Structure formats: C-alpha cells, structure tokens
Length: 297
Image 1: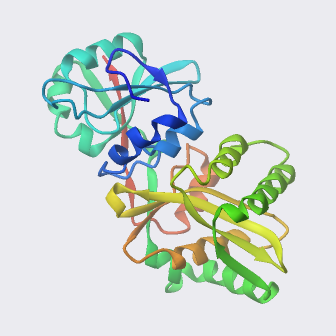
Image 2: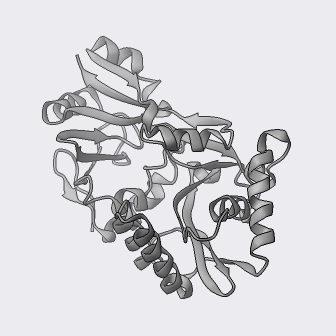
C-alpha cells in the first residue's frame, strides 16, 4: 500500500507503517505527534488522512501532508518539510490552519512565507516538555527532593515490586491495568488509543515497562524513539491508583532503564491544562519542542 501524491489523500491504514515510519523517524525536532503510531492511534479522533508531498525539488523523496479535524476546524501538518508555494496555497483553500509546525520546517522559509501573507504564532499549549534522562533517573539535588521522597516512600510501602520490559506476553496484564485505570477515573480519556497500542504491540515500534506489586499488575508505560534516536517519547502511562507514589516511581524507574544514548525524554504537551502544566513543571524541564501554527492573514 502506498501514499498517493497531493492533492489525493487516503485514510491512515496499518499497512502504511513501512512507508511512513522510516521517514518520520528521521525528523529532527522530536515533535511527539510525528510518529506512525502517533498518527495511526489517533486517526479516528482527528479524522486523519494522508498525502505525499512530491515536487520537482524533492525528486520523489518528499515528506507527507497530514489532514485532520479538531473542534470543528480543519488543519494540515507537514512533519518532514514545508510544501512549495503552490501546494501551500491550495492547502489553505481547504483547511483553516497549519498545525504543529516544527522549527526545522518553519525557520528556513518563515520570512518568505510571512511576506506571502501567512501569520505564524507559537502554540504554547502544544509545546512538548523535554527532560534530561539523567535527571528523571537520578532525581538529583534539592530541586528533586520531593520527587525522591515519593519514590522512597513507594519503595518502603511496596517492597515486593518488580519491573519487567514490556513484551507481547504482558499485554493481557497491561490491559487489566488500563481497564482498572479507566474504572478508577470514571471516564475514557485516551483509553481507545491506549488499548489499540497494546493490541498492536507486535506491529507498532513501541517500547516500555510493566510493573507488578505482590505479583499483581500495577502500572505500565509505552513510548518510542524519536528525533533520530536522540529522544525517547513517553506516549502512555497507566497505573492502578491504589498504589501511592506509583507514577513517580514508574517515571524514575523507566528513565533509569532506558539506554544512555537517549539523553532526552519527551513527555509530550499539556494541552493548556493548568494542572497538567504545573505537574510537568515540577519535573524541571530542560527545554521544549516548540511548535507553531500558521494562518492566512
């Protein structure tokens, strides 16, 4: 199955993984959404459709154009490169805005596009939070004192705990955790995407850990390598709430388990949720993956 050239779009299909994943893994900025799993698992929520950005300039090796819908508005995304002027003009005729524009895509052409009447703004609610892997693994110094206390209290309260590398054999246990997570909250949240990520564990390129307490499934996390292997993006973290401190422990233990060549951990965006923003700030981000929106003036 292949991706058609613009202006033709097709729905995202699992059969497109081999076409999309290698190209998307080479994007430099580390935008957490720009992975095959990120697009595929949320294809229904945002009505994603995909086209290939082929022009004479890229000689058949162009990136992709993703079309989607959110809150009654249509948007397009260009993970790999900006479209040429003709394609961009056409996209703005059929979409309300250009979403999640990364710095490496935008900055080389920003001045020219502004002169063509496109207005760009920082999209702070969608900035991805970046953390040093070593900080999350070691929780060093006074600034992480409270976090370390949470982890130490967890270890003292639940001495019979175990961390295992996530694999297909643990999918039923992870589904048990996910179902309990949904029941505890009384709402679905991202349950559908999280469940499909588990169902397709052998197909998608996700990695993670699962945690047991007294032999019972307690928590799991899943993510993947991005930004040419410089970052690890954590996409899903689910736990049984009865275990106090489980999220702090999972964060620390998984960060410590990651290979050292991952210097940065991307923990995605806060979506403008003030409580989530405060929680992410308590882990002292070392930076952000900045994203921009573009609109025709």
